[in-house]
Image (cartoon, rainbow, N blue to C red; front, side, top):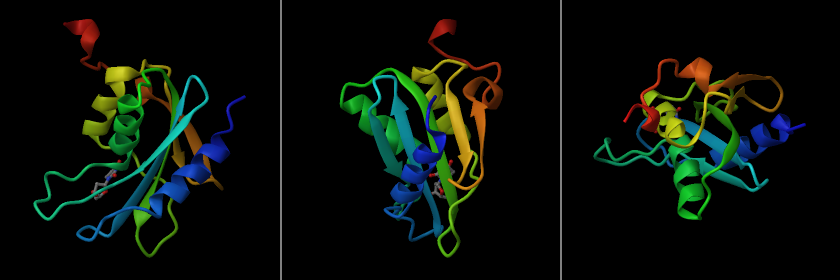
Length: 134
Ligand code: THU
């Protein structure tokens, strides 16, 4: 049984590294690979705004660049800097990036380590356009 609470704790910890001087909205993510390894990420903003990278993509890009391709679950924790991290739904771009590597059954844990819900990529990104369509 996957320890989603632990994954949410790691996302909360990763959120502390958030570089978000413009939005002051801090997000952390923890990505569990099928081999048991975990990669974390935070959002990284930029003065030009558009180069900003979300926490989820930071975690996925870290993992893929280390050779990982098979993923089981991701926990996401977000919120205003002065508040404790909590529920934060992944943006559309991140859902699409997750769909590049993960199937409909990939688990997405939303909330913090005290209270979270377990969702699936299929429920958050129905009718997805992926490599199966090309
Ligand atoms: N953000 C994430 O990192 N992940 C999400 O799922 C939603 C938004 C970041 C991007 C930006 O740095 C800040 O939160 C406000 O949008």
